Image 1 (cartoon, helix red, strand yellow):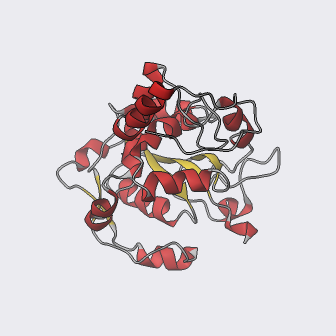
Image 2 (cartoon, rainbow, N blue to C red):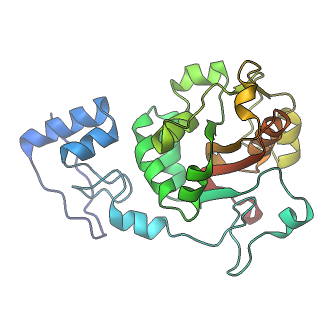
Image 3 (cartoon, rainbow, N blue to C red):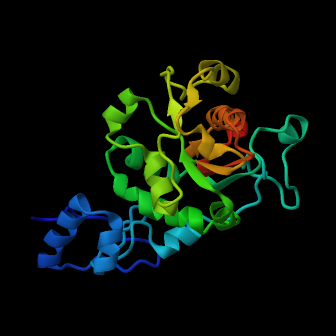
Length: 265
């Protein structure tokens, strides 16, 4: 098997070296084993951002360059000037989330990474994205404080198309013992939300989520951490939080990989 040529990295990653036998092993492991298995086997891998290797899926230099923590609104995770803790919208209209934590902006290179994860059938991104989340300020305490991690569910049709729920994979990689998949149900499909504003999204999400009535007692007085890959307008997370609170959850927060900033559009 041969490996397609790739560009010489401009970062600290070492230039590509050739291991004729390992090339075949690496590609086989990459497509058939989780990323963590590659890391544990100490086999070379290629950074998905800069192209350099040997590296992890995202090398240390790219993580340091593109995942620097920044001040964010504690309620909706939008970027804020230094010193502020909440944005004006959340001060005027407090959301149903106690806190919301995002690792990065939904921008280069993370938008492409998440597209590969969701739409190109690459669930092995869950482990490195979970590691990115754990390194985010306040994420680790939120995970530890939560009774349950609840991934945002997909419809059966969407789950069939993708083959996996990206939010569930991230939650399991973060804390498999606390993840409660199936506690929150998506009982109705919605039109494509990608190009819609917040008001339309909220209208589409009416009666979309429900708590499994046979498991509702698990929520009573508990602390729930919702997990998703991207937060765009917040409509999905807010609707889910309201459903969980009505079912008895005392505290609901959210943890997402990337936060889109629609103020820039």
